[in-house]
Picture 1 (cartoon, rainbow, N blue to C red):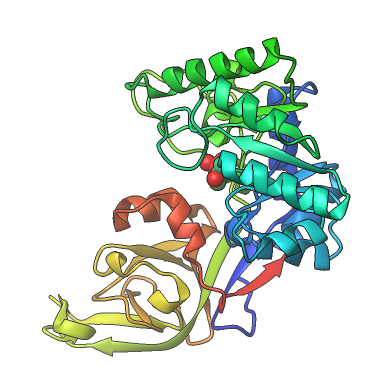
Picture 2 (tube, helix red, strand yellow; picture 1 turned 180 degrees about the vertical axis):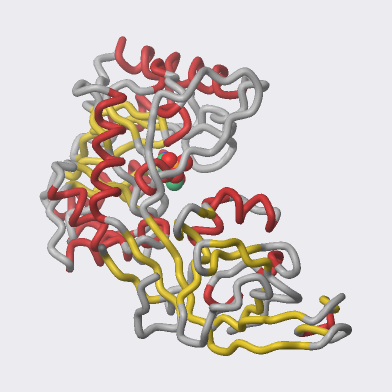
Length: 376
Ligand SMILES: *Cc1c(COP(=O)(O)O)cnc(C)c1O
């Protein structure tokens, strides 16, 4: 395993990010625009590098959560359209418009506000309107009359997109997604009858793409997780997956120290682990401050020299102890794998999430900014 002069780092494959993007485009076909989601620093893969890669591969649109993320991409020279999905706060509107970011508007009051700003500046801004089709989070109610009234009172702005988001897309035991689709379609049809036909209509994140819920693809899809190589398992009688993607990120840490402890020794905070027999331990230069979930204490594992090594005792802030009794060749300065492949062994974010009682999204987003990023 290669050594790098860092305590802990992630290796991100640009090639794999690009290949995942292509796999999604091939799945949905050329009639559907793919807008990769690069919020939260591209799920910690590095928003600037990931966005450059996607732009080079032909992405026309990228989606972020907030204005600051969009501004960082513009400052890095990204020229694609950028949709800001969860902002339009009073103190970010100026920058959002100045940097040519496209807002998602979630309330009819904000439709009026955007129109007022456009009129005052003599500009014509495009926006996407978020509909709450049943998730109970951001968005306007799917009631056509007030939306039509708000739009006709807003002649200086253009409704370019109509969108919604699913609460339970991976749960095929629930009818919530079908109900959301029906509510959203009823609204879109009612608007269309009145001549309101936005260029982009979009509903789908990774799961409805991956499991082939074509009715929800329409003219645009918004994959995040799949861009990074993940599709969460579905519940119930899901159709077979239509999308093949692979993780683009590997996470490594350096061994700080190796030593032997006698039978009966306690390891780490709280003496959470007691050695039943003599044990050889390696102490890694990464801990929960780097994003290793504390819940992996005494139950996670890493890969050392191609073999699995259990985590012993509690994960500390900056350190984690592993058992290398059966891997005696491990030395200080060696590299171990926290997530990714090493030899024939591999660990992915889903395995870590399961052990830690969380979701793979949270494992990826939890990789701390102090963990160096290396692009391969
Ligand atoms: C994060 C997000 C997505 C991407 O979701 P994935 O499950 O990562 O594909 C799409 N749409 C909205 C509104 C989001 O917030």
